[in-house]
Amino acid sequence: MPIYEYRCTVCGAVFDRITSSFGDESTPVCPNGHVDAQRVYTPPRIVFKGSGFYVTDNRTNGKSGGSND
Image (spheres, helix red, strand yellow):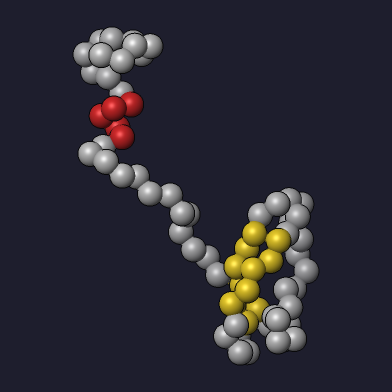
């Protein structure tokens, strides 16, 4: 089940909420009791490190994968 982050528009508190896969459309309640909260959209937490994953994933010399040269 996905975890979404919300920010209360009244007090500014940030909190997480676990929702069901079927689209739980109920309004999230702030830990301080406020009902007016909006979902915070953040970029995915993925980082590509190194000198280029594209070069290592796609060979141009005609060899098929299977062995490490």
